[in-house]
Amino acid sequence: MWLYDGKPEEMELVVRDANSDEGGYVVLLQLASGAIRILGTRYPVKYIGSWRTSTQRHDGSGLTRVLISKPHPRYEKIKRLLANSMVPASENEQACEVTVESIMSKAAHLFSIAPASNSNLAAASTQISK
Image 1 (cartoon, rainbow, N blue to C red):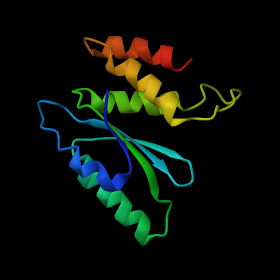
Image 2 (cartoon, rainbow, N blue to C red):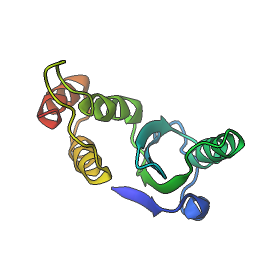
Image 3 (tube, one colour):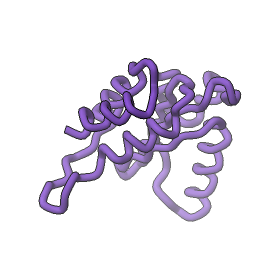
Image 4 (cartoon, rainbow, N blue to C red):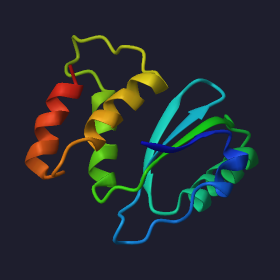
């Protein structure tokens, strides 16, 4: 399910831009601080290159690991569902530690849904939030 899992410097050898028929990519960025960012894009090499330049210019946390999914037509919806699954359901609920592995597991579940209709993805979002 993941086309690339490695250092940001080497991804352009493996990943190309997605065309509109394919959709786009879900991308996980692991920062040097340990924080994780989730994004969706059709142009991962350009987006991540821009991110790296910006963080270097502003002395921000560098990237240590990049994961790029296979292209998916509903990549933006899947990205939103993954991001929402990281947020506690209520103020009383404690936020659990988010790991790359936990997000990868949730992403694998979402990518396996066929057809990837709104109703099927909505049902899956309640499962991954638990």
